[in-house]
Length: 211
Image (cartoon, rainbow, N blue to C red; front, top):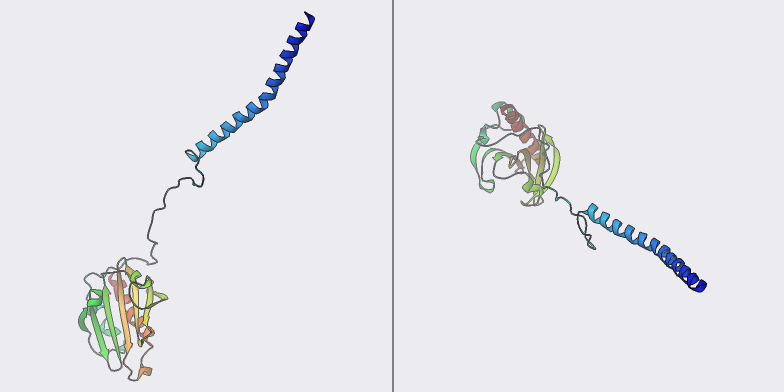
């Protein structure tokens, strides 16, 4: 009888030891399950190897322009972009000649004198970015703003006597000012890009006033 009681007591004690030993393992398992559940909740779903948390796709927006405002060129007469008083300082001694600029789908105006020629065209069929993105042929070069509006020069290596100034006046529109030398007494005229800038500055003075 004593032996049986001793055996039963030993078995209970052994069972308690086994249960005590299993408690840490059980606690570890519970903690692991809780951690996995917390990770799933924080990521909004089941974690997948190699995946990243879903994010909101960025909205593509056009960078804001540095223009102080917009000046629309629709309906502008290119020959009226310069006043009579502005012609002599630009070494122009005759009225402008209206014409077409099919390459820009625009109207233009030309002033040709002995030794140089000037041209203005209000372009409304495309934005100035066609030049900086390489869609059109020419080497773009940033220059100081003209009347506060962003501007660039466009040159072609094969024609050193010509320079185009483009002024970014509105979305999808720009003012084109071209100045070129004919080779006769070039010292009497400004360099091509200087002449193009002066021409654009004179036209922009009037456009800013007109709004």
